[in-house]
Amino acid sequence: MTLPDGFTVRVRDDVRLRPTPDGGLSLVGGSPLRSMRLTPAAAGHVRNRQVRVGDTATDLIARRLLDGNLADPEGLTPVDPAELTVIVPAHDRPQHLHRCLAALDGLSVIVVDDASRDSDAVAEVVRRHSATLLALTENRGPAGARNAGLVRVTTPYVAFVDSDVTAVPTMLAQLAGHLADPRVALAGPLVRGHTDKARPSWFERHDVTASSLSLGTRACSVRPGAAVGWLPSACLVARTATLREAGGFAADLRVGEDVDLVWRLVEAGQVVRYQPDLEALHEVRDTVRGWLGRKLVYGTGGAELGRRHGDAIAPAVLSPAMATAAAAILAARWWSTPAALASLVWGSHAVDAALPDVPGRTGLAIRIAARGLGWSLRQESALLLRHWWPLTVVACLLSRTARRMVLAALVVDTAVALHETDIRPTTLLGRRLDDLAYGTGLWLGAARSRSVQCLTPRFARQPRASVPTRANNA
Image 1: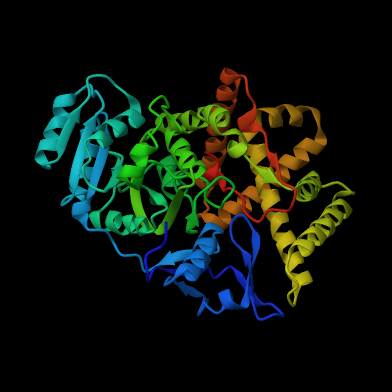
Image 2 (image 1 turned 120 degrees about the horizontal axis):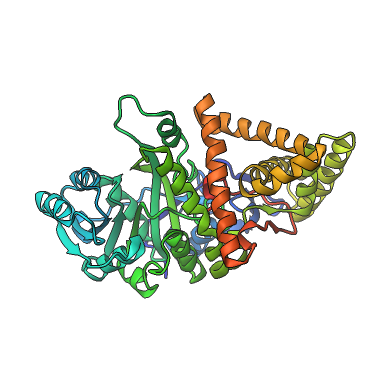
């Protein structure tokens, strides 16, 4: 499957381009981190960091850049709205459904009522917005409801928008532009927390600024281990035929069905894209119980995802050298500095050996290793505060070193919050409660399945430059 003529990709600004002695081009960056060398002939097709597809050679170059997360598509053409059908799974909450359907005005919409308690209220909202109603007689859960709607779709493209999400037609049409690449099966926007309240509660403000469905501002080819490892089903567009061939969502999953779908598509050789400059708004939960309860439920899905997809669910991906260095720094002992430096030197040497022979290779290797150390610190801090917190509490009761590591992890996590969000005392409190709820769900799921797969980090042979953020820990 070739890209259409004129399809353009642009090398990301954070990718380092270096000429090679033979006139080729070396690229270092991507997610996970990689080094790619282009021959002189291939390098000649990279102009102003862009590659425009016009033949077999440029098609191959563009694909390699996209697959390595070294480049992003540029100038995509929105699809014709007449070629797109929107499926909205609904279970009561007619006021949310009204807001959702009002935003989708002008598109063909199928509302799947998943056996609501007040089905008449849902039907009235659907009638008011001239949408198509598919009423289920038994509750199938979000995955089953979406699959029921998928059967009714006759257009080449389909969008899934949850009833508590606001997504406008122009955004969905632009997002579906990714499907011009015949390998792309699924694409998603940034899903941002939202509330219309003039004076939202502290936890609602936290969820607006730090929603677990918001996966950052970096465009990405989505896969396990990349900067973005999954997409939320709150808002997605897909190629109808491809999704049907994949069997749709896993109807037996009540949570994690979106992660499972993305990973199944990737395992089948399909491409999934994330475009954060397009946004959908997700209504935040309006009670503390509902907010934390949802975080706990998200966590319980980890064990089943681990059973189906193995170490793709790993809560951290670490190289031995960087893991050792980060642990030494968190321990804050007299030996921490020499141990961290030794690990950093070893990591720099490993990176240097893997890089092509270009000017400034040693300095570049040191910077990459230092960045890897920072990401390892972040991952290990998340393990202590989020995924492993029950063990962390026990360790703190028994060990002074463990208490020092937790304090250091809190400093690291606060620095992350300062960098990523509008930090306030409620932000920090929200992060801690989020961690406790999600981590509790992970342990409950692991106990039920009698598997610690979802709690076990994966160790890579070389330092990695890509690390899942908090929101990526599905």
